Image 1 (cartoon, helix red, strand yellow):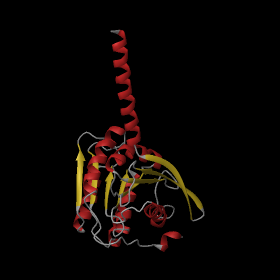
Image 2: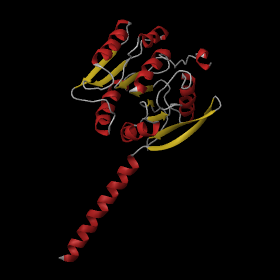
Image 3: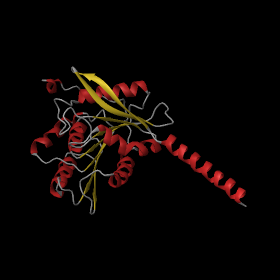
Image 4: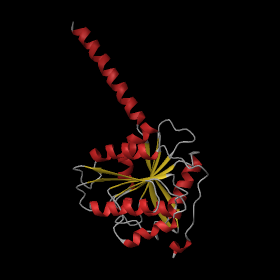
Amino acid sequence: MYQGMSLKLRFITAIFVADLATATAASAACAPQTLPFAGVQRSYVLCLPPDLKPNLPVLLLLHGSGSSGARMAALWQDFAARERIIVVAPDARHNEAWNLKDDSPDFLHAIVNGIETRYSADRRRLYLFGQSGGAVYALTLAMLESDYFAAVAVHAGGWRSSAEFKAIQFARRKIPIKIIVGDRDEYFSMSSVHRTQGGLSAAGFPIELEIVPGQHHGFIPQIAAATEESAWRFLAPTTLLENPVFVEYTQFEN
């Protein structure tokens, strides 16, 4: 009887180890990368799904103030593997904030273009996601590069100053936008989020606002899991009807 139990234990252990190996293999492989840009060595994290094939979508992640691309990539890693998404998460030059001079659209385009070329990604399915300060910047980038990104989703962010709304005039396409925010967000009030929604809606953008009851600002794992599901359900169906067009804004270089 002891021997039978021992054999049973070894059998169960073997199954457990096999399942663990499968789960590990199913995780996206994330690795830090560098890119020289404008005389500065810039950093980002690249996550590739285990069954990497041509024509996969690409998701560009913008971290919040004080955070990093590595943290954003880690939170998206398992979801990206499951949905077969190539994820790229750059670091802002100064991690307290993204800005158009140091983190220009050209900088992000240089990273994404290299990845799309290297892995034969679907250029018509490039999506943008930002959190907190990254959400604010993602909304601005969506206006500047509305023919480049297929759609944008943001968490815990919106425009709060009248100057930020001026970016709307640069949009060449009514890019789909989703804002996800908790009704207890400590940094972005419901009034500012509704103003953002209203301004974009009035300009003709298809915009979806999801207010999560009881949710605070932080992008912690429990919040991230639900946010990623919701954001991707919104983003994934949208594909550019024509090849993407990237617009260069040389005025940001000086």
